[in-house]
Length: 137
Ligand SMILES: [Zn+2]
Image (cartoon, rainbow, N blue to C red; front, side, top):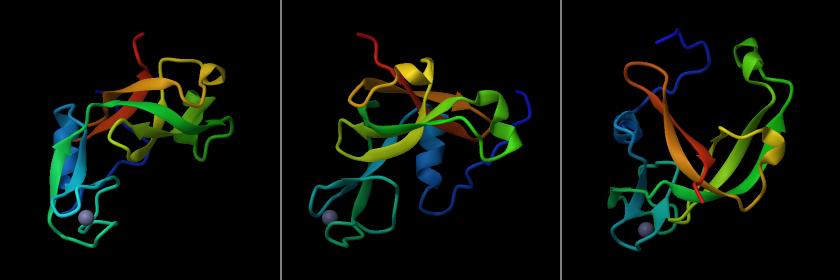
């Protein structure tokens, strides 16, 4: 595995379950046991009703591009070889939105509303990043 020079996620007591599942290529979101709402990103309480009675549920991994931008001038040298690349807000079928990259497609081919599916990029022995590619049609 080549050395990974980009910023690395640092799991904490709230996100460690998410990252452990991601390493197994499973996409988890939080669901509130009290009001039933799904949420992402992970927090210690429900953003809708403030309950701390949350559980992790596996998302389908399917969603659509809610919004996106194409990065031509990367924020740091470690992203230079990727440019141009797409940073998108993906709305999962479960209703939550997730910031990620759209890969395996030229950035100028990405469209709002495009169906996408999660794929995982293994960047270290413990971290895998959820990314999205166009869904097979
Ligand atoms: Zn709730």
